[in-house]
Length: 299
Image 1 (cartoon, rainbow, N blue to C red):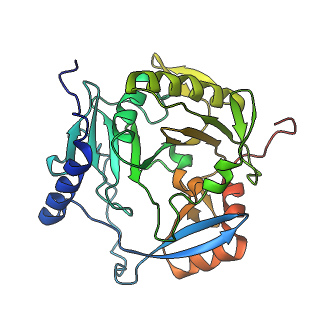
Image 2 (image 1 turned 120 degrees about the vertical axis):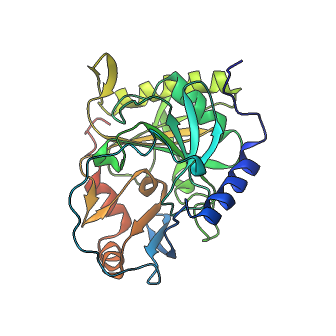
């Protein structure tokens, strides 16, 4: 057994306790938001807007500072659990969603590197502990704010709109050609796969296999950089123990609104009322199309 391993059944109570401690000592800085729902293309999108109570006058421009890796070293007050010899779990310091977990590589790896078997093992160790959604922002254009490789996990439901996952109706209606499927209503390139329940080791191996199929299905290639396999273009990945959805990206923002993986789950974030009005005007699904890639005719 690994010298660093998560004991089954302990992550959720540990996550709650570490969150309370991080809040008490000021290490955790949640972003206060208000919620609204926008219905579009059969999806009840949850839109979070920064609360007016959280808005502050703009600070004077600061001198540029060198890029610092927040995970090397990590803030011990944000530590949640050791997952394996290669990964650990941390709280997301500036979280919009409660109990937002980061699965981080102990040694530096690029966020543009492809997800590997050890990544999936650590990811599934967390996803198997409570009802949650996993996501990965593959590159800056896909919403990654840090270049150090990290997968993410957020508890479900994603909002208080009475639904667990906004895109659930599309997932339920997935159509397949072999192991790779597509979701109705998504006019941009994407690929979807079901996952069968399995112990963590087998689940990780199955996920790695499906992940490679999805990359191939949307035309993303593997390239070698410094001896490691990297992606040929940015993408987002959503995952639960039951399915995976991969979406290639063409842009970071739509109408000035940054979109990461959670946007494709039906959860979007805007910074002010003007952005919310713009999103309501163009429609959330149109915003996703603008940052996605056009579907191939034979897809």
